[in-house]
Length: 42
Image 1: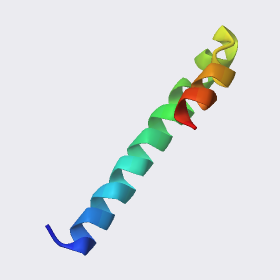
Image 2 (image 1 turned 90 degrees about the horizontal axis):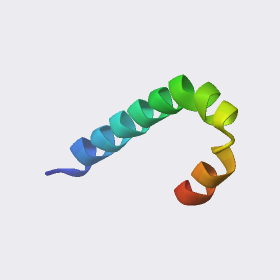
Image 3 (image 1 turned 90 degrees about the vertical axis):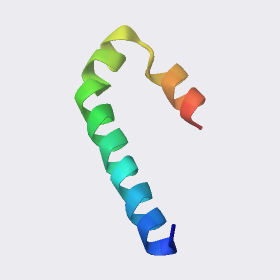
């Protein structure tokens, strides 16, 4: 696997995670789990 392909894969995964986070953010905030989610992510 070359560096360009790894970088492209990393960007794609990051965008997918960002999209999912944007979709589920309202329900996470309503559940009061945003702080724990951020703590887990960091």
